[in-house]
Image 1 (cartoon, rainbow, N blue to C red):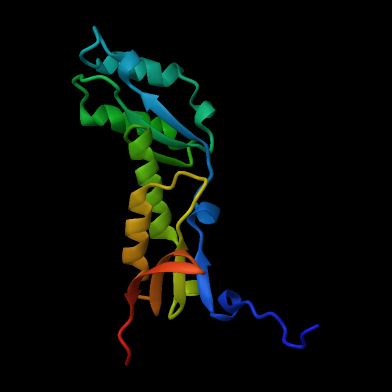
Image 2: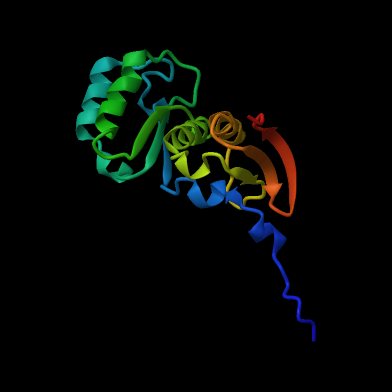
Length: 171
């Protein structure tokens, strides 16, 4: 039996792994589609929308991330999206304009903007690449842009096999 202990070089390297899958917001997502509220399938009537908003059960969106959009090509004034947002806001955790994909991109942007960067200051950071959760590409791009000014180095992949992205100048 050898007296030399096995050394985990990855653990000893001081690299911090940032796993978006673990940090990414897990709240339920919902899309509010204005299409069923259209008059003759082409336009939205203010009185009809206001009546709907007063009678609709908005509590079903409690603690959800919600995107408001119209799934058909129609005449939708900006105020209509805003009116729906004012009814969602007391219930939803987050409200934005867009379909499911646009909602996810907005959630990613909000998440990256709110991420505390202090644990990564002057550190060697690897952003984990493989994920079971579908994290949108913009999250990785925006994360790289936010981390670059504070990290010593930035990599992508797994600590044992990374793609170098950035290394701070010495000095």
